[in-house]
Image (cartoon, rainbow, N blue to C red):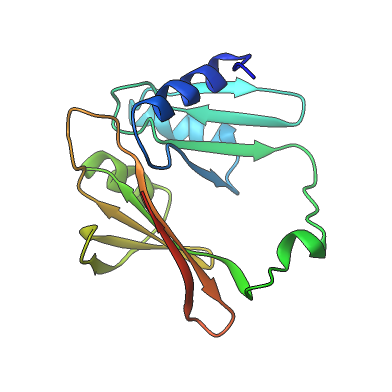
Length: 168
């Protein structure tokens, strides 16, 4: 069907202009704490509140529009069937996303420490960050005139090996 709200319409519009993931969702930080930090640093943001969650998003053209934060007001209980995969994948291992200095500044301001530069023959080289049990790699944008995108996601197995990588 047709998108019924502003966020869904924007998502559909972004998808119509090319391949690739369009958002990185981060959770685990109170949006009230983030709002205070972004105000101190004069980073423009939008705060959306709902019954079960609060979002923080960033304006188009900010260099951060492909990132959003969600703060749930309800307990999220994933049952075992949702977390067990036939191919023994344990979850997301690495997310490769486009971004420039502003993205790295926000990530480091949240306490993420740069860990190592990572390189991929098709994606290029980027700064690595450890996020919980996964890694986030920030690579330069292919086209500075276009909105940054998520460029790849790889999934890992319990033994640490990669089970699948999706490149956009």
